[in-house]
Length: 426
Image 1: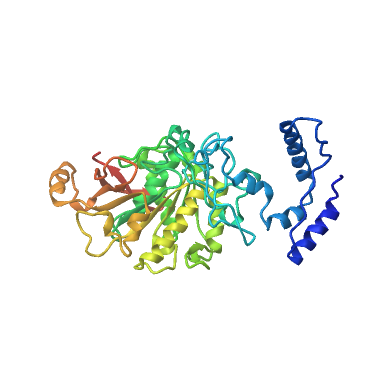
Image 2: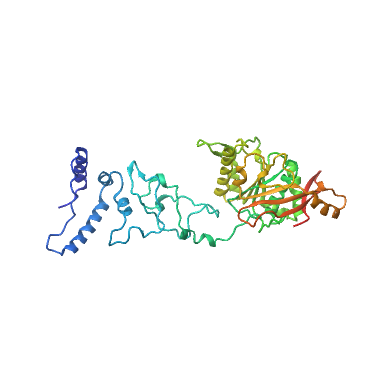
C-alpha cells in the first residue's frame, strides 16, 4: 500500500480533534510474509520507515508528537539493552537543557548536544569565557530557552591549559579588570599615564614587565589636553620609550560633550550609554590591549556606596574587557582616613569593587621608616618627593605586597612643566 502524506495527515488531524485514536502509519512497500525470515523483514521495514519519516511533512510529525520532533525524542531516549548502558551516553560532553520545554510542550529530560569541540569550548578572545553555541552547531533537540547555557567537562578544557599566557602589563591579561587607588593629588593619574606609555612603548614600569609595544587607549576627562600631553612626553623621557613607537600605539579619547559611559539597564543592571558605545567602537577600531579610565567617578552615574550598583558597574566593564580582548585599568580615590598601610579595601565607596577586579595597585606616601632610609640618598629632596607603588591584589600572581619606591621628577615640557615618576627601588 502506498503512503499518501497529505491524506494521512488529514486523517490524523481529524482523529486528534475528535479524540479518536490516530490511525497507524502504514509501512511503505512492506515485503510479503515468507519472502524473508522475520529478522530480515524487520530490518527492511525499519529502513523504509526511516525513509518515510524523512519524507514526512513537518506538520504531520508535530501532530503525532505533540510539538516535539521525532528525532529529538529518539535521540534523547537512553539506549536499550542492546545499545549500551543508559547511564553511560556515547557523548561524554552531554549537556542538560534548562528549562526543559519546547514551544510549550514537555521536552525530554536529557538532551545531547553537538560533539565535543576539538579545541575546547568557544571563547571570547583568550579570556576563558565560554560562549553560547549558535546555529546548527548547538546540536539537535536543545530548546531555545537553554541556548545560553554551556556546560563543559574536564576534557573539554584539555587544550586550554596549554594556551600560553598573554600578558599586557604585569599580571594583567585581556579580559581582566584592575584598579589603581590613592588619595587625591598623590599621583594616581601620573602613575596611570606611565603604565599606558610603558605598555605602548614596550618598557617596564615600577617592577611591572611589558612583553612588547601594544595598543593603548586612555580616557581621562578630568585633565585638560595640555596637561595630558606634557605628562605623556615626560613619561616617554623617563621610561626611555621611543616616541614614534608610543605615537603609533597610544591614543587619548575625549568627547566634545561628555557624560557617563554607563546607564541603567532595563534588567536593573548597567549597560553602555551612547557615549560608552562610541568608546567601545574606538577600542575595537584601535585594537587596544590596555584601556585606562581615569578616574572611576567620571565614567558612571551609579551610587558609589551601594554594593549592588557598583557590582553592576564593574560587571558592565568586565563584559567590555571580555568582548573586546582588552585589559581595563580604572583609577579610583580612597577614603579620607586611608593614610599609610594602604590595602585593597581602602577604596572609597562599596566594598564590592575590591572583589570585582583581579589586580589592584596602590599609590601612597612613603612610610616614615622607609623615608629615613631613602631621603638621605637624594640631595635636596624631602619625603614628599617620594611615593610607594604597591601591588595590593593579584588573583593570578604570587602573593602581592611587593612595593617600589618612586621619585617625583619635575620636567620642563614645551612651555610648561610636568611630573614624571622614576623608580629608585625594585
